[in-house]
Amino acid sequence: MNTTRCHTYAWCVETGDHFEHYSPETVVTPPRKNMDPLASAYTYDLGYGPAVSFQTEDFTPEQARTKARELRTLADAIEVMADAVDAIRAEQPAGGAR
Ligand SMILES: [Zn+2]
Figure 1: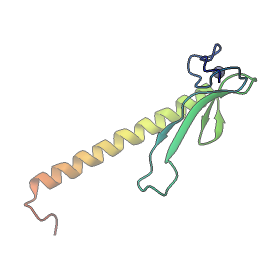
Figure 2: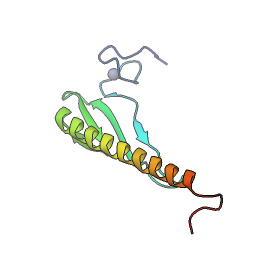
Figure 3: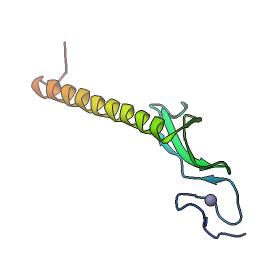
């Protein structure tokens, strides 16, 4: 088996002779094991130029950046929510809200 790394792209995980290039997939894991990932993305090139795949849809670099900004906004909002819950819990006696 030819395990030579890809000569075309540094991000490609394929080895040996190949014409379809794929990066590792990055995923947001689901809240429960039997669910699909909440989001997934990877880069690939099937010979027509590289593209970003987000949720199996082809994105241009600008579309990918737009989606990344949305996800960053969501991530920031989730952290704010978690901080708010922490602050409320810290104020309450053991036993939680009534
Ligand atoms: Zn490759």
